Amino acid sequence: MLKRFLCILALAALLFLVDVSAAQGNALPDSAFISGVNGHAQKHSLSCEARSAADLATFWGIQIGENEFLETLPKADNPNSGFVGNPNGTWGSIPPHSYGVHAGPVADTLRAFGLQAEALNSLSWDDLRAQIQAGNPVIVWVIGQMWGGASEHYAAPDGSVAKVAAFEHTMILTGYNQDTVQVVDAYSGQFQTYSLSTFLHSWAVLGNMAVFTSLEAEPEADPPVETHSDTYIVQPGDYLIALAKRFGISWEKLAQFNKIGYPFVIQPGQQLLLPVQEAHATISEVVQPAPTPKTVNFNVNFVVRLPLVHRMTRLNVLPPQ
Image 1: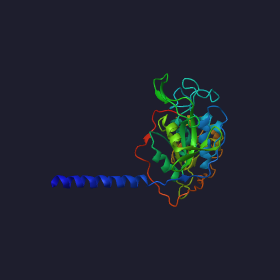
Image 2: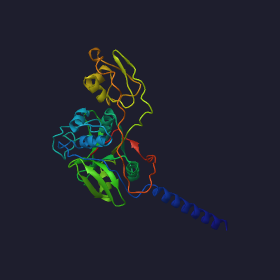
Image 3: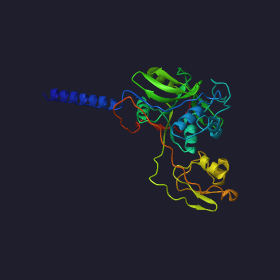
Image 4: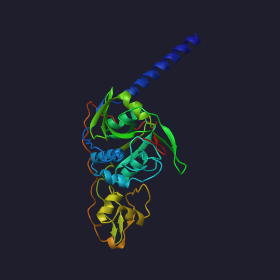
């Protein structure tokens, strides 16, 4: 009798877990699409990452040129550290030949331009769905035009290792339903639709890598600008490149003068020293408010904001396109 009771209890517990799992799986909508992402065709054979980043920044109201982004990206022998090779190199090669860049340096450079960005790998499909339903387009690393492929490990001259794959490529994920995904292809700048299974297979080659972005919350009120003859206090919404333009100097010079290293991130409240000859230039200009995000349209009747799935891991040293 006791044995029968325990069996019934175990079965009830199993059914409960199944119900909870099903409920969690249904927490995200079956379909969601983001409007307002405008794509442009990449200018160079290997500049897909810069093109995707520039188009995504524009969605958030931050204007960055493709070549401007390319020039700001660090250069390296390992795509996890910077852009490998020549942007006009032959597509389809792997390091040490011209290749491109992975998510980490792209996210770092976007932050230097004032956009919150995070590079992640080992993501799940639900992680991406949660971002789309929250209104955040995502840069994803795939192979070619959603092709399959095989990755391999590349050892850079400095001893660091990266997972790489031929025909690494980026697209911006903007929507999905139960069977398909919608992306903006950096190659053509056009919207494309692929089957979900095709996308997941291609995305997995480089380890389910992506860059998530969002805007910082706009402050309730702009604090007064604290200035001296040769210093500037960083305000919310400031970023290094914009400040350098305001002061009429190069961002490299401003970073070097303040000993700001890669990835060139500045924080509100941080005091910047200005070269004496530029100290009186435009320091008293009004701090520009953070740009307003685009409107997001969903074909669902509700919106639920969920935390990122715990399986996400920060991209420390990983690859692809």
